Length: 167
Image (cartoon, rainbow, N blue to C red; front, side):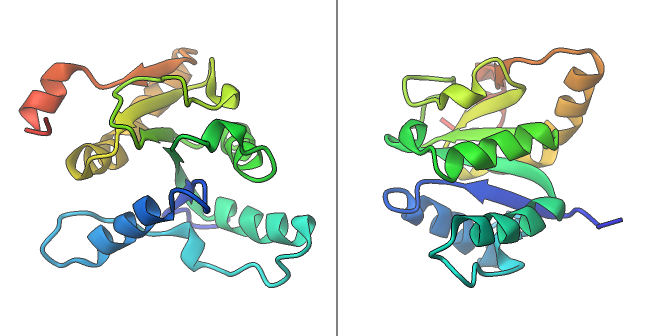
């Protein structure tokens, strides 16, 4: 059995790479409290011309992941080749899903991919402290929601934001 300690991140590589890179920078910065064991560090797609070979490498990353983060930008809902597939894999594997709105929305909005509608996921804004809070707390809540058959979209209430001084 594979030890799952990685976080799988899906995003629009053409438009939202800087947000993904910032996650990596936070994790590497010794002055920032942010643990991020990146599933994408496991391998690199060797034959980028073949969709199936890329998906094979992505499956290896999924097999080692305990959590799925989706960075939602302006174009994410239109990405059907890989991002939609990645969302569907996370749902199939029942990975806790953290949907991070790059426009700082705290709830699902017009950019939400249709494959996330009526699925168990937490929607949060792109802010260091709330992303860190979600990474550390959402998996247990996800487990409880699944146990109670509560499959829907969630978001953190304002009192959590105030408590964490995130606004």
